[in-house]
Length: 300
Image (spheres, rainbow, N blue to C red):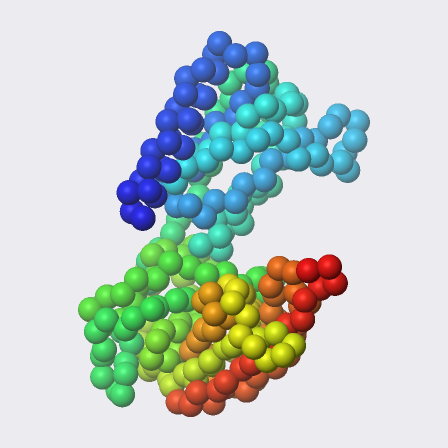
């Protein structure tokens, strides 16, 4: 798996290099984008989501998707087959909740280069407490954030295990509500990232007991569906903070997820079947069975 991932990155990088090298001799129009951090190093991540629109002349309210995107995980992207003219470029870094742009750029025929400087990112680290004591190697850590005072959008961020807790790889300046959950429970906290990046160490987070939901997808005859299925769960954890948690079941339509106690709304989907929605109540320290019945669409 690791070798396949490295091969994909290598092939994408080679394609980008060939495209950039071929630009001067080509009559086509290209845009080569580098994404860099505040210290000018390339920002390596697979979570870029750029959009490029052509803004036609004499049509100020019109935006047209333009170009074909090729990207790698080294902070580089190339849009090919572009139309020369005024364009609008926006960039999302999904794993960090960064939405930057739009920026207006002029694209001329042939080779074009653009360097995108991201705002500073600051790491946040802290301890997690199990039974009142620091606990090493809390497994399956995940984190979802909501920027306070923003549009209420929830996003996942990379989180690492440390000796006694966790480390968030980097956050932009701002205030956030965070849900950190793992196989042993969950914690809810807030972070305030100041403009100077001088972050006060957060207090240790007590891990509260989660409840486990045992999922099973069945057909109209209550027989397990031998299919991979996806269920999405939502619940308000803190004021206006509704994390979105997705679970994919195994090839027997079964799965499990640990969630903070309370009422959760869920929606389930499987290709060829009718969608299903409902609610489940999670109790801390207990298991709850959730059987989801899906019926085939006509003609399937």
